Length: 83
Image 1 (cartoon, rainbow, N blue to C red):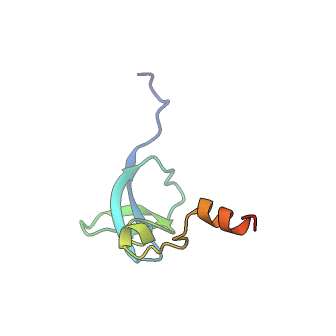
Image 2 (image 1 turned 120 degrees about the horizontal axis):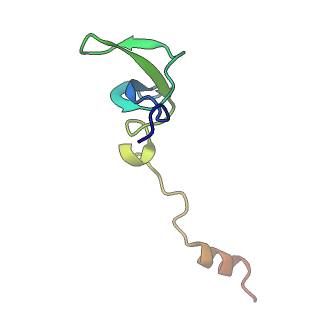
């Protein structure tokens, strides 16, 4: 591998703003100007706020709703059916 062409891969805390949860993982996000947070292990990590994660997404939380139960083809045929 060529030296000095790969991004820095370091630990980052991803915090879900809507669910109030956070998880620690590694990422290539540029963490230079990010706020920091003291994690459970006593170390300080940069924080990246996200709007949706598995903790708040309707599919993963089981709160997803089916909006259209009728098929699109049947709806089209009913709308444009000839008398």
